Length: 487
Image (cartoon, rainbow, N blue to C red; front, side, top):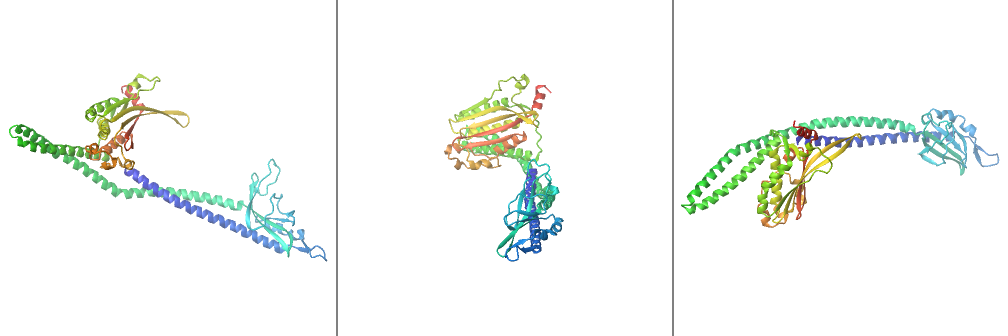
């Protein structure tokens, strides 16, 4: 219990820290990426301003008010100036015709006037193995460019378009490196937090564990010490009742005291059961119980329990049946067939388990109802690593009744110790609930026994329809083979 709680605490510490670190890493990544993009856009706009100032604008003729750009004079020196910074220039005519470019090949991209910068995708032509790459790092793939396009005007006359391009890998390369660094750092931090969380949760659980251990020890010691005086009281009460029965023939007035002593006897027996239940749970919790496990034929065990409970079923006029599901029709070895319903467990604990479950079903089922006990073996075959099959088997016992049922809100707490469903919520008659009072430890003990046998227990119920308790036990086939071989 404490290990699972410690595990959950460590997982919560790690998960919350991982989420916070992930959000921090995403924030850092977005900030750095946007900073890189803004830096490139600022560079491109600066280049546009520099090139605009260096443009040589000439009149078309001496008598005309129209102007043109002298391309050779304007871009003669700009090509060398921008090459070192991986910036390329393109000059287009007013009609969109490419007149000059620093690129080794023209870009098949329409002109979009945009001073804030835009990211464009340039696809390489399929099948063109001789095509030279625009940039060395994009030899075998498409490229992305960051571009700024500026209209160049004199007055109201459009002289052309200036487009400045910058390779996008100047953003993607540091971004990828940043993602790797952030991922590695976040992973190492998460591992560190997981280790720290495991250590701190263990430290936090130590006082609780010590208190719980003292409580369990107190419960075990108190239960053990109470057994002797309770047994002594019960013995003396029984002796007193026997003496009163002898004296009652001479003095009938003693019958009143006899009834009171019988009430004390019943309460003492109930207290004895409670003490035994508390002692059992305390031993299970502390791990001091050392029950011996041996092969247990579950079919024979259920037959014995059903036979014992048949008297109570007859008194309430309830039909109690046991159904053993036959093995499948395919060929099974006689040794396995003989131990078809056999598991390794503790006989006394299993008897107590099914006595509790069947007794509860009979107690909460009204007269003329039905209680069915079904035993089946479930064979499963799972593929491991896609190569070979792993065979496993389970024994499944279902105890179904047509009783008053359990409210859905009470199902999650059924296995809590000392928890009892409020009889008023079952909407049944008083006669159906008069005898249903108990200590609230029956299902807690049942769960402890099932978990001690590495099994599972599940309760499905509908108010007014009935309840089904399903218990599943694993069967280890290798051990079963040893049983068949007589080892």
